[in-house]
Image (tube, rainbow, N blue to C red):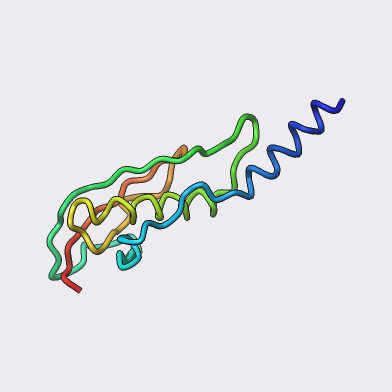
Length: 105
């Protein structure tokens, strides 16, 4: 019985954790809403990021997963000299693709 309670408590506590933190060099990367490519920007790359969509049998909060995916993509953007990201679709199974642009802002 204790094991079951410990496992349940651990799952609830882990679901509240944010595992992805914004890197200092990613703070100026902006994220646009999905849609047409931004005018006057150079497309640098496409970035695919992934986080766990569930922990054991527990399905993670979809908003938290989306937020972590965006943070991971922002962390990757400076590596391709991008300052702007745009999602290329909705998250699926803890994975999402973003277009990375340099807009010179």
